[in-house]
Figure: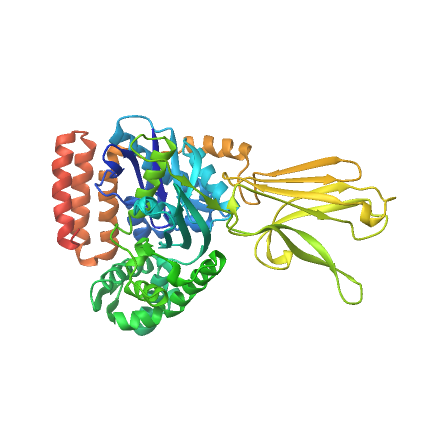
Length: 562
């Protein structure tokens, strides 16, 4: 069975394509959305999802979120006694999703199609594949999130020549893609985005304004109180999508909180972030060589796209309202399910070819001569331009810069800066050349080939000797190599992870602990409820546990309506 997965910054979803079309699976708490949060409890067991999210409020040092933003880097986070890389944290979320899928399907899942931001770099895509491997599944296909959203909206069924702009604003990333449907092919003309712009940044702006109005320094708040305030403001941000004004009230320790904000002020606070969205939108349209009047539809997806300021900006820019009739949190996951069905060659789906583009320019370092003839090194020479449809292969010729030069260094970079110092170095080839030949005779032909799996192959041939060199860049700095994956896989296998059937109990206790942190007057009562429920769990009597769980939930709802 092949499943489709939306591995998001804030939430993740899993589903498949079956006789009824794309179908998403609920987690043990009955929700389609599983928070992309990993934590650890007092006994050293790993927590994933809602329990970890509540743990983050009550014990912020024992949970971590938004690690999708770190994919492709070697950053590590300590939870308990060990350090976790972003791939490992993502793998734990993937394992939870796979357990939900297997519980719903009643069969083993062996492969997944995972959605990634269109603007994810080579390293970030390979890190996502590594996370799948660590979770115990094969990930041959990654689908760009805007392309997945297009499939969810059925844009592949539109007439030939239809053009769309898909805008995806999630919890941590922003993507835009320009697509065209032609003869059974969904072709991506251009992609752009910002891997560090999402709903979390709008929440940061809201938090800064709230603290400033209350006269509180963020550094003065203990971590649990910062987490509590952030949760309140997250709810307020969501309410502002529906209400003209929101009231935030409560207590942070001894400090009372009484704060109001309306949509107009929030729009002012969000304006710098909204302006950051315009640049990738304009860039994608320029790269696609299209004017706004040539676009047939605009699709808006991602949980953060609910904010009215986003729809207003898009409407002003394109002169029409965007499509938003598919649930914004579910659209990408539904599209990933369709892609999984296509990969499995489901007979219920018409054959659709999905093209991808190379998200960044790939090239090499060259030296240039100034007006006085002096050599200036460090310039970036593009070979494969960004937004080239993959697979793509390009060849160019290079020559040494000095007479009697014995070696030519071919350094491979990724980026958009004219200087290599501002781009990312991916690898290097050292080529021997004949120092006796004149410069013009020491030509080296260099070919870059970038395939649909995100693998860059670099070939260099010295024309004088016919000698051929090859560099296959399957790994990038900060990405785990195969041996490291095997080591990390063994370490993850040794982790104590709560079984799926206990997740409802774990999440309920984590919620109770968070409420204990937040509600000082109710602490004694909460302790009594927690003790009673723990005693029921210890009996291992499923019927008794279910009854106590219902009672416990109702009791907690008196403090915080679910």
